[in-house]
Length: 274
Image (tube, rainbow, N blue to C red; front, side, top):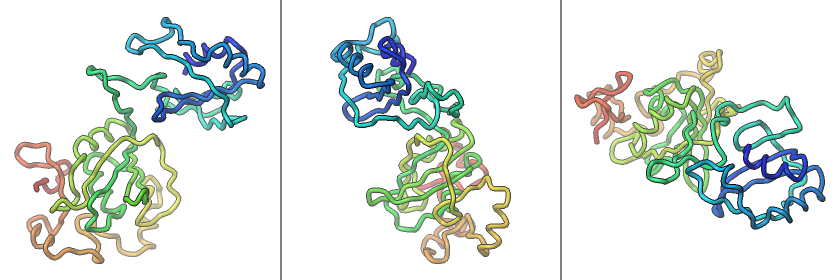
């Protein structure tokens, strides 16, 4: 972000910058005061390369391809390494997102390293059973305190956002649960990645969304009636075969990947096997 500001501010005051990635590569929206200034910057920079001394050692040559945007006033919600509003000093700062650079981080092999977040995005495959926030909370809280969960449908598949208090906890859960199944038989398989969200806006209290940071959560649960047990599927989708198969664990069909060679699992949960 500072590099883009340096390059474009040579032609006039830069009001706002927003950067993002698409299939075509790294892109940026740069807002000037007027069309004349933007036109001068476009004419001077189109086809040019960003000076080598401004770039990090691991970043290759960066050529600029300029065009006019349909936007006339960018909507910048917070200051971060991805967005900046130089006209509003009171705009909130997203501290989690400030620890970045203009280019995505690269690993030792030169491949892009996924940016981490305290929020995990989960794709749930092969859903033989319904998955509620209570089910996900039981599974993911084995690795740390889960703050919020939201389940939604997208592109014909069930997905979920799981928010932890910090990135290390989310990273540990991602490493442990990626590719594992909530139920035996390969059912409800988890595909996990980091979300760009850092704080979920959960408004509803239901089987699809839950904010566990609310101080009156227990009162809300009481008003809804008996809570669904975290160790067994709701009655509407009970599996007698799974119930007898896991009778040694109190009838719980949930599976937990174990990091202990002796089969012990985090938080005293039943060991994963399958």
